[in-house]
Image 1 (cartoon, each protein chain N blue to C red):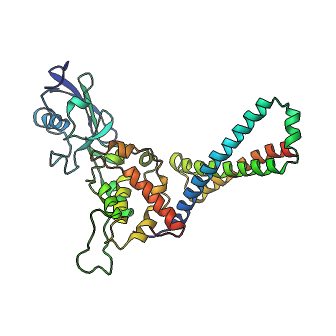
Image 2: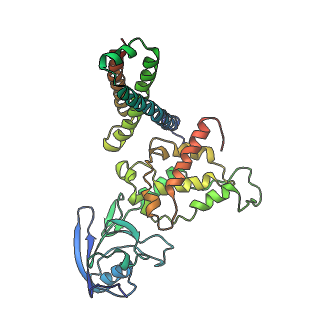
Image 3: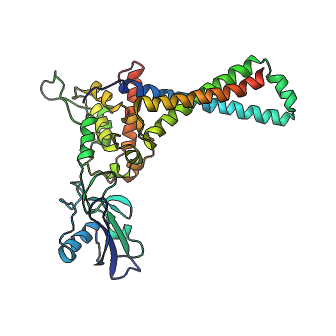
Length: 117
Length: 242
């Protein structure tokens, strides 16, 4: 039973992080969908919706955290797939997963920026 | 009685050679209460003495005769043809995810190496003194009971997609054994074992697809053991000591 590298410390943490973000995302997606339905039912125009989202701290906080949660959760999932589908291991694999996270934050952040500013 | 609508013979396709071998067909007489092992023994004794396959006990105790029957890993000795023959045909291949030796025989060394890597062996506590008194109804002993009957046949290893995707993954049998030992109050290496199963290719690599639990001929649930190891790892991480 060799006690090895940092792996042993990282894997349970990353696994827990993915589970926690999964639970949070379930709630966030629920709120997101209910909001869409409510807005659709109210028959608001795009201009009216943007009028409500602009400079809204609530929208910025909610969707900002949504983007972060999705980026973390998605990148951790991709990290698992990389180990199963490619020979990449260690830094290469972790680096690729971090890149995915950065990309998701950039894309989500850009969309958020467009509706709150 | 071989079921209704069956003919006198069945066409059996058996894997021959090593990894780059191929299937060879044999016509085998259909008999009442015939098992896959009966078919293999018939072929070896009457049709081709060169056929290589493992078996020993013939009654589901030793775990040495596991092969893939029509694509699904099963014990040859406990698999009646009635359950698996389709259109009077049968296909027999070696277990998946293990190096081929010849015909239906594979090298189980990687499988058992993973048991060692997962700490799947008993380590006495340094303070062990005399006989341990273990209440049969205690939660720990019940947890041991749920997984202890594994005979190491390798069926779960063959059926696990994660093993196929990541050969370094410790696999369901090794992790199941590790979980029984984590509940063995006489064991003195539980912290080290939790470390051993929490590596990059340890219990967290499991996708909980439950193929191992679905296929285990003993009705065990390695997937449940693996999930329990994950929970134990999180509990240790958060400061608890389950």
